[in-house]
Image (cartoon, rainbow, N blue to C red):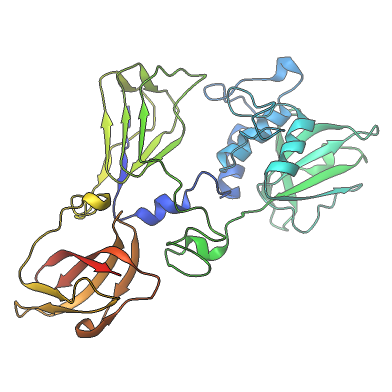
Length: 370
């Protein structure tokens, strides 16, 4: 049965930020699960079988890395050299070159079967022959009960096997894929050297998504929609033969809206579902053109101000909490008390949106901090 899933986020903007396409956020568990599922067969619905063209081992490891979240599109030269139309790098030397130069990795060559300490679940390993040429690719898909590494490969179609069955005393090149995102970049707080919540400084850039994104040209199984699309305002798809193909997973993330036009088609067994999670700020937090929800029971003064102001309730219902957002809907601060003498952190300036919660209501107001 066809499943259609659509993600439209207002209140979950943190998720949008940490999914920055320029950041390396790698999920080794997901990559290992993919390796275990597809180690003994070809996923030809999504990837090409390169066995007739010299072997599928590097392509299979590429698939695992992509399923774990790595973007291999830089190729070997930063501009996509040796990247195949299905997004993999099918040559062993080329995949190694990419991992060394365009991913955040550590690597170590050994002449035995014991991996370096950093090498872990979800990491690739390569076999070096006696002529010092890399000739095979393997993927650490499982850790046994005694923490030994087990590998899967499209070399002989092996699944979760001990390393010793793959090689016979030649050198091995072990990689470790590191996440380049510091821990403070995914805690949904404005901390560290960030210039916004979980963005800026050593975190992904804050301006990572376009204002609008449109898909208005024909797609194909060899040129499909990307797995995830992000936009600050809206995403449109259609007015052409735009399809989500069987077994393809596609998600659209937009602060504003997602518009599916004639010609868009989520085919049977595709994973593209409508789960409209529109928060109550949909109309009040739409870039600088927000619509302020008026309510005379709440007053803010002075306004504009320098970051110090009073929030007062006139309806006899006490204020319980105030959430502070930027003009584009990014949560930046929460106030739990002291509403008669609010003092915002010094880095919060410009037009801000306040969600003011009382026992009986939620009011949205604008405040300007100079």
